[in-house]
Length: 600
Ligand SMILES: NC(=O)C1=CN([C@@H]2O[C@H](COP(=O)(O)OP(=O)(O)OC[C@H]3O[C@@H](n4cnc5c(N)ncnc54)[C@H](OP(=O)(O)O)[C@@H]3O)[C@@H](O)[C@H]2O)C=CC1
Ligand SMILES: O=C1O[C@H](COP(=O)(O)O)[C@@H](O)[C@H](O)[C@H]1O
Image 1: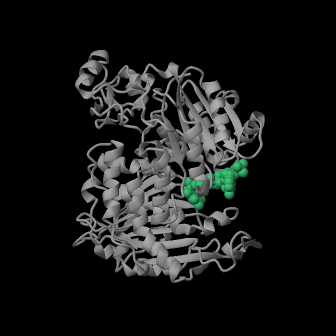
Image 2: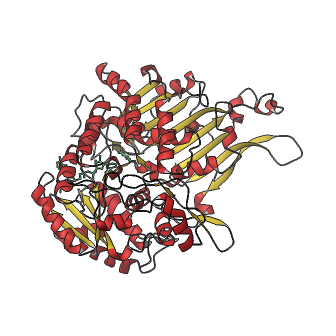
Image 3: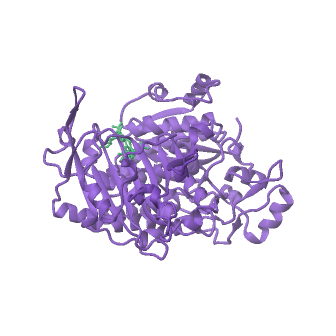
């Protein structure tokens, strides 16, 4: 099988991650095998790399740290190589390590991926299919094993049957699909056990060891389980089933608590067993192609970056809507609500990426440093800048769509919002006074996620007569449609061809389906690959999480204490009218509700 360095599967990493720490009772007690994998200290590094690998143009600068206590982390510069036509291409961390001669250990090491909660919805829907896609694309290491772990009784064969039902091949890659699926399924196993039993994890450990043989063992745990059992699992896995000679990493699914206190408590508990660099807090929106592209769009195009401030931008809208309700997830949802489910994480992460200053480099820490500065600069969120709603039943075309509280797992008098809109502000020089409007809702008329940037009016516009009194109609708007049907388009004013002088609004349009023939990978593929490679850029650091909760916790408490009643909106509608009043307060119209249909 081709290795990770295959140009087909470059990870989002921009530097070569080093093997990190160990879990268990003896954290950071490096074994000889670990030490042999560590990048060389800086004073040796450049000479050694350059003499061994003339193709590498830049390499990571590794700082010298106490090897006995601190895991080595490579730093800064983006590794890149010269490709055939003389242009420079960044390389994946694995390719980098191979080019640098740091990694000829593929054959001697193995990665075991344990999906905890393998019988659940997310595992079936997203995690196993993403792992298969990585396998299909030759992105998984040569030696890997996948284990499902849950309480449900299942044999390996039953797990394989369950998993096989959700595997698909990309439209553009159907060659040998069923053969590949079969090969993949042969690498999947199942272990049934309790989440709080060290013995069960010790049995898992035994099975993992059988597969790992004498190879260096690296272990990735994906916690695809309800949050109340995260700590039990981390404790048992770290005590009984962590790697003793390679890395152990844990992907933690949201929700990371439900407010500042519970989130801090979760972090504290996790850190009893793990170091921060072993914790990969996933926000799958960061793995979405167009969210990943945000920084590229802004920082690699001169036409955008100079406009990216209060001087030219009138408002920014972050919009998430789903055209289905919480059916089947009502139990979970009622304890969280849309603000915790979508705004505090997915939309706020996008906001931070959108608004951050230029990071020093593309290194994970540099990017996360900038994001956290944005989050910490946010003006406290006030109740009068928030609208909450809840969907009610609605009958359309003879079909009755149930209301939120019709779900048996939801209390009839629930005040949990299924819709929220908020106006947020960033108190810094770049964004002072610019409303960042967020809107998220379930059971709306459409499924979509997008970022809309509305620019200011052209001062002294020579053509203002062509727009009548409604200058908003002439506002340039940049739309980054995250999903579905990914696109980036810019609404511009244009002369309608002909002898007269009539203007219209047209789109400069980058429609992904038309421009790129390749199917866009699912967010979970990118994030799983990054976790395997130790790339943290798209995962949430604990201080980012603290800042995100610090912004939303007072509001959430106020909503709950004051028992604010959500405005009801019919299933399948455009949401509560209160959202329009909120936008109007800041002289804004929601871009997604304009009468103008999107022209592809
Ligand atoms: N589903 C989704 O689309 C998304 C989910 N998430 C998060 O991912 C995680 C997993 O989600 P999902 O798969 O939907 O969750 P599930 O409710 O399907 O739970 C996953 C598995 O955990 C076990 N489990 C469920 N409830 C309990 C319980 N009360 N006590 C002990 N074990 C339990 C079950 O396995 P068994 O009984 O076999 O042990 C179940 O199959 C959650 O943290 C969720 O918030 C995040 C984003 C989207
Ligand atoms: O995290 C969550 O995300 C999904 C939406 O994800 P998407 O990738 O399908 O847009 C949402 O349905 C769910 O409520 C939430 O927990």
